[in-house]
Length: 277
Image (tube, rainbow, N blue to C red; front, side, top):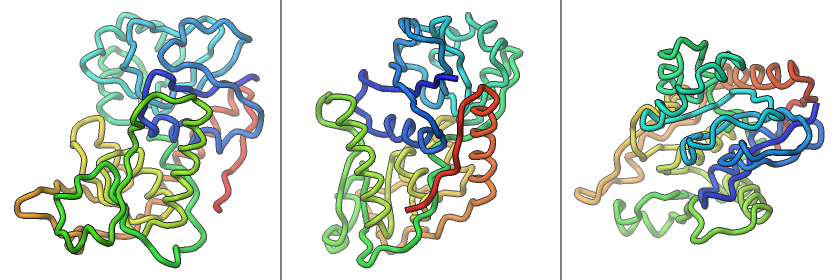
């Protein structure tokens, strides 16, 4: 069966591309890319599309074109647009069960009378790295440096997941790959407000502290036990006082990965088990 994965020309958040790379590592055949926000325009060959991501930006464009067979896994929407999607309840019923990224999304869809469950996100399935970095870095990802003492800032590097301007999709995917490699090869600790930095890093075995918003959308990090804190400027947070611990969620990772591959195989997609680097 042909398979297409999600592309994101409409956004500058590289975390979106990381979600697609997380799915791609389980696929053992050629795949194409389709625009997440304009699936209703698809006019190519019949294909399967794994719906791992946030489906909120262009809700008026739902549902996808008839040539697309959706696999709902890691699906997320917000209460703000739930009523728009509920109008297409029959579509969701047709392709149930709906694997949701988080409990909040599952609860919304269940309230429509549609079978849904918490599948987690494919970004939780990156393989653990084989060795620790020789010179581990503290990496602040979309985390304000001023929340930490000047002495601690000196040993930390800062990066962001939001690109300063739109760039070509192939360049974005290459940047996402390079970013994952950077984490894997260099990170001793990641302090981040981005769930799609926190989850792949934890999956790779990197200690992570999550500092972003806490709501139904971000509660997915609780599935894998990532510690969550709120940093502040006064009094400044101390990096050395953060609740750092080695991620340990192999059972959850195996369950999510096995579920993902089983759902792909059920639609005739060739799968593989990702290997660590």
